[in-house]
Amino acid sequence: MAGIYIHIPFCKQACHYCNFYFTTSPGNKDKFVEALLHEIELSKHYLENEKIETLYLGGGTPSLLSKSELVTIVKQLNLHYDLSGLKEFTLEANPDDLSPEKIGELSGLRSSGFNRFSIGVQSFFDDDLKYMNRAHNSAEASSSIKRVQDAGFENITIDLIYGTPTMNDERWYKNLEIAFALNIPHISSYALTVEPKTNLDRKIKKGERLAVSEEQAAGQFNILMEEMKKAGYEQYEISNFAKPGKHAIHNSNYWSGKKYLGLGPSAHSYNRVARRWNVANNINYIQSITAGIIPAEEEILTKAQQINERIMTSLRTMWGLDLSNFEPQIADWIKQDLSAIEPAHFTLVNNVLTLTNRGRLFADAIAASLFVTEEQFL
Image (cartoon, rainbow, N blue to C red; front, side):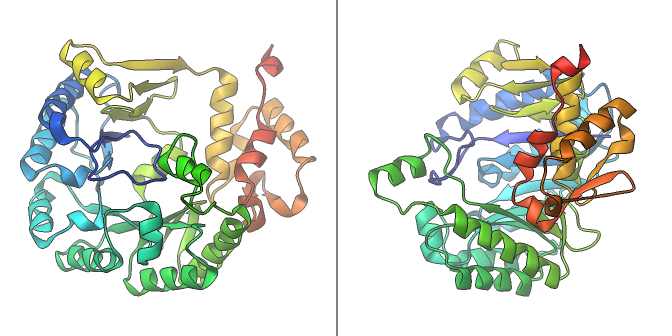
């Protein structure tokens, strides 16, 4: 079983923190959809005829596409891939797009297997939303969720961002309280990160936006973990929390190393042997696909890279890294490197390595310290 991710690169306006590829110009939308349909056909052999378990439309803002455009995309997928085993079909949407009329349109996709909304709430407070330059307001954040629920969609995830200078701990507690009261089964939550060359990075350097505090973000991450646990959510991945049985299948497959195909500009693909990524430019993407060429770069993964990816992704999950799945020599290398890590940051029980709450604050650094090297295989 495998997954398909489709990147829809259009947005109403630019969120200041975003470093994903997007465009606020809808002028090429028709040509983009036409190119995407062609790429679906060109890539039909990438997953080697595996059944498709999950379909995820992200972006950008997929909800900016019309129902007819979405239906056309799904029909094309059905022509070239086996969607008979589809379990999860997620569509990302922003609160300001989810009018009653739009939800009515999207409800018509149920027959195609559409069963899950991912709503980019980020915060239930206007000051935070203005700082991030989001297009919606706090009232729309709550009302959009209620409208989706009233339309019969129970499988919902929302995004929340902590660590913004406008959000003190009291407000962060309130954000979580509002989310819990809305009875949302899945919540993804991330620290605000200032990525280089984003609008937020430029505005902070110019003094037009307050800087982000790592100390504040770390404290609010601890609040997040504590409050989620109290509310009955499982932290099954560092940034993802779900009620039992409501884990995201698509993202879980990323962390467990299943194959996936990425379609659209900047989308990434993985087939366990190599990674490839499409050009992050709409015009170049359209021109290349029109010429029958997938505009992608590819990296063949070495054995060390494959092992290190497993270390990185597994340590982010509540299931941890099972050292029994490695050759004995590789497991020994990892155990030797553990001696340099603070004992309070991890547990090793029955050969399964997991991070503690304290260790999750340093997950990337801990994983990197356990990486094997190419030289070890010479």
